[in-house]
Length: 570
Image (cartoon, rainbow, N blue to C red; front, side, top):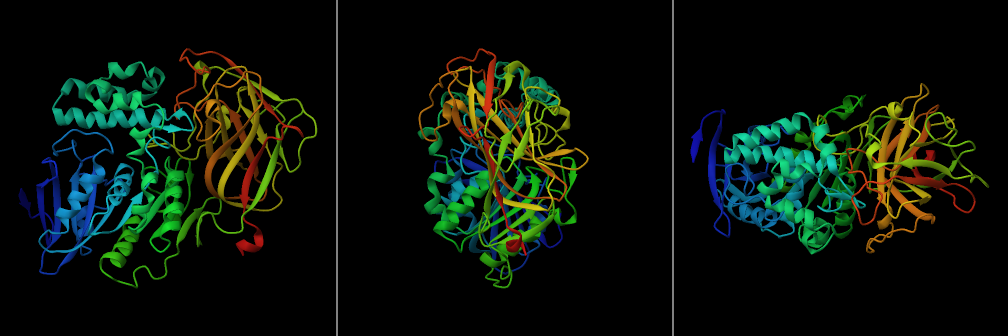
């Protein structure tokens, strides 16, 4: 343990050893204001390097210490300078509890501990809270999902390729540096620098990249392909009762891969303990947090002020400053399109009316050259729209909701026009709106569809189309045909039979301006966000599938928009 005098009025202890219940020692740094006052502790536990302290989005721990806190930043088990083997999520609950038991008794501590951090560091807070540690008074889980299996590894049966492979390569580089294995480090560096090729080679490249050999947990991930007990033991949503008792400020981003999980956490936890849980949703993607997201500038109101918000939260719960959080709404969300913040008592906001737009075409909805429409009435008769999907010619992702680095994975709002020339994409567009249309809540599509395969994927995307033709994505969704019955065992579909597929595009808060239009994309892949499906229930060998989307009185495919009536808005 060493003391550094780098910061005025602060003492900094580095490489402090913290013993866990099984004897493993974890490394931590402590930033502490000088003086005799008893102060609360802020804890950030990270697998990405305690010196970095997630500075991509947060201010330095020294800044937090200068606000009147003892700040502890710790390397998770098996990462950085901490002992043990890294097994994602498996030890975070117990290690978090043991660390809080230690931190609350630090010299100068008043016994109260708060936690913060985003992504893995946000989710680990939830796992820690589930252990009911004495002394944990509040937390701020940011960009955190509700489940490891559903939302991180898979989405309705589709493997989240871009998120997980880029994450494994990044974490692998840290492990290679930790082990001082220069050759492996160089191999992973080359892979990250040419990530599109690695996506195309997956999963055959896992062995070549030495990921399975170096990370024992990866074998377990690949073996447990269903959401079984292995995944449930590290699922936050399986432990909502104990978690609900810890006050939490949930922070999400409209273009973050975990936004639906963030909202799920808030909704369920606030039902159990309504006074403990608050929600903030910015227009950001996973990182970095800025007014500039993808190709759009959401304006000055979208700038990152999370540090100041967290201090207000911590002052309220850890310093008993009742004025710090007195006027804060339960829910505050950024309304894209209008580009300003709005307050609500719950999510989704009250009194939303469901507007249904029905799919319609005469000649066919294939590509931007088709005549696909979204209309307020059902098309009485109509031939189904047909497209062909081949896994080797997958639909490229433009923007969207993924993680974690926008340089490595497709994220954010992007103009979709470059892919709208393709005939394996069905496009349905409303007439230009004669007045503003505000939506807030979950958007979904109900598709009556058939396929020549015994399994396949269906993908939707919701867009705002401006008068000049630019089409910016607001949300997307995917569902595997064999998993259309939620909670049931996957089963092959009967080729040629019409199934009803409800596909969520996620939660959206947006204003379609007068003169703009609503657009729906329908296709069967979104690469590299998701691993393209082979179109076979029992085989990975790629085959071609012909897909039919019906839209008539018997099979009225449609989308559902949660519209906020004008009188409520005012």
